[in-house]
Picture (cartoon, rainbow over the protein chains, first blue to last red):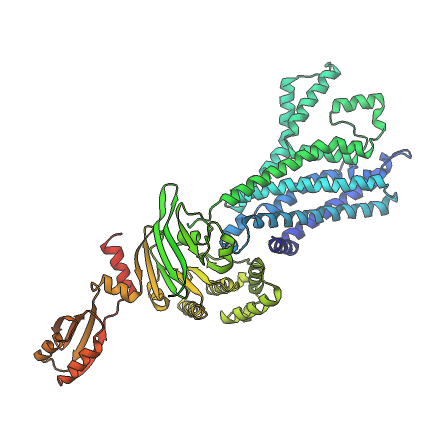
Length: 311
Length: 312
């Protein structure tokens, strides 16, 4: 497996694909940092805690925050690195040659998946490091130890989220013979989950527990509870919630209704301690790991059982 | 007796109700160059895939290098090389890097593999382009690289699946030479093809497969006699002046079954190769011997016979 991993890693590192993705993410990161440093002074007061984390979450009217960029780019990078993992080997005539070598079949899939994940980790970690460096220089506020911890966990969660999309892309590369089809399928599913899932969740919750401006707070809370539960089918929602809780320590609940109450009662101003934030995002993280594991297991089984046939 | 390297017993493979390989019994000895013949879709590639453990047989068993490929695919794959019909390489890697990867997958240490790869690239005539990307290679060059690729692990047995398709005559010569040099190194070669004249040139023994079962097996010479002459040898003799008494004296030679004459030539059917005895009789009878040859059977005629007459 190490041989496959090494080769795939080397291939990725010199590929144009990796270069383009890295440039793309780097540009987004620099833009987002620029925006954040421009607007951050207005967003913080001398009493604000966790100023450093604000670099990652501050947006302006013109440009969204780095967090938003990253939630957009992670699926794209992961899909771009994984969508042709198996079917390109098949189509180039390498697969039967590769499988006639004395390696277990799962080493092929493991090696490729891990190499993709390693590349993704390199991109995420280096981009976060670059932003932190830039922010440190421009804002001039050093991060506290808790902020560093939160950023590390944020990077980990981002890698897990990427692992899900990569597992999905690898699955499609096993299922579909053509690389174009598997890419379109992955991108299509991502767009659906990213754009429409919240709309669908809202519509279902609206049909179940209709609310208007006169509804009681309990009813509104229930409405958002339902839409949130449905929305969490999508790993994009899980990632969004997990990262906002990690980078915005003030976030105490994912239910907007409950958050409104908190704001009204003044609870919003007290940030959660690190371990409480961690507890809050734990289900989201487990959910993402589970989804990635399912995709990976299915592609595993499909690939192991697949017979190499004479055409 | 030489060691048996491949043996199958009633090997069968069915794909969704279609029988690709039907109770195949095959026995190949070490050091042979075995020609595996049959039309497209006869089950040649499926058989190879089963022998490599890439596909599970529906029933029956196979033994390759005294391992069961279904249960011990890895052990078999360490000893067996396979050149698929539509072989592909990583186009953006060089020839050397591609072979290096194969060596790594075979867990060869770098010190050994580097020297071996250099030698092999030299053998297949690609040492000048060793550091060029494979995407620039012609079909014939890729095929030669494929032969180097199966050779990297120094196998005991190689399967070459249609290695000469789509290659120009010069390239075909190169590949046949390489097959011959593999055989010389003691590697057993199983050569799948339907280009019969090529098979005839390099193979010591052939098996003909049709609709998944073996219809004929043996040396080309033996197969020819079985199919064409009913197991007999046929010798053609030409003399300067045919003397009717000569026919009688040849018929007197022990083992001669039949003598037919037309003009100055004779067609002698006999049980064994009696060329020297017949030559002696002719010389003794004071006739002038102009030429003599034993009928050789071309694989093409044998093959055609199987696929036109019997419609197997």
